[in-house]
Length: 260
Image (tube, rainbow, N blue to C red; front, side, top):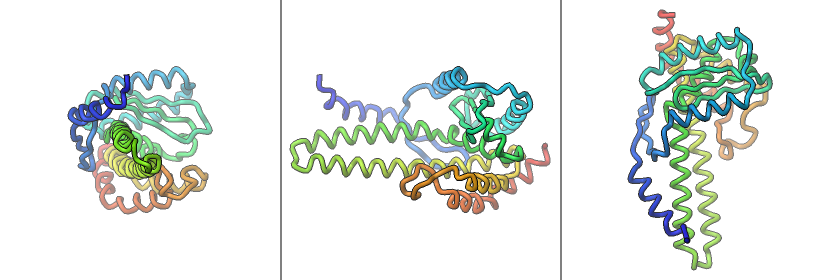
């Protein structure tokens, strides 16, 4: 069976089932095609990571991450419905990173804890990763990928008899790829902003984002190529954006820190 002719119909059906989602903290509307139970998929993925990666046996690191995480979870509130929060430290001294999955599953690598001098800095990174989840960036990227693939198949079918067939497909591939890169950079910036707000609402100083990303810049981590070819904004662009958002988030911190 030639499935090529079925894909446009499948794409149309998925588009019909999709709907708009309003991102918490920013109010941006995004179009998302439902591709499964986010919470169940997140839980399954987290269980797989725990089975493969070494979980830290450092009680101080674990207590630190869980304490910070609980405060951020309270700040997230109803923005993550159905969340069953879990905060795990993975032993990887050379990995300065963290991640979050749908359903409130958060992993922090020990390398991040070594670099982050304060709880405020850890909170900034955890807030950023959780911001990706509450904004449903993963689902949005998958939706864009499905749409891009469907359009590519339709273009292939419509131009198959054209002498410019290969050129048109190559041009579309370049355009679609560039769009995905810009899409990813926009998601990173949005997660930065959302993470600042979550950290501030949890009583952590958002100014720590500036000190943390300056340290990251000194380590040499991050984009090594021109911004238009990168999935992440440059350190300079990121720090400038964070500084620009401070007037919006510092009042949240001043109010929240009275509770902690």
